[in-house]
Length: 110
Image (tube, rainbow, N blue to C red):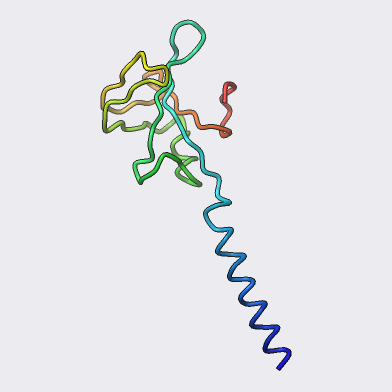
């Protein structure tokens, strides 16, 4: 009987542990499209995950920061400083655009 109780408690504790560590431990970050402003800085536009939400997680985070990939903007965006707009379209490294994500990648400013 003691073994059965111990086994049930251990199983329940394992279930709680694994369910609490699923997506919360996954590396999720907010990202933005950046374009050089000509003065050594950048013009930044916050982007949303096409799959929902404002964060990119796991493989989505790796994919969105990959310089070989382009990012599709579906709706007009306003820059972080409020001075510029970005029209819907596809933006990638070939056009001078880069995607930067907070605490991820090798962008010096973030």
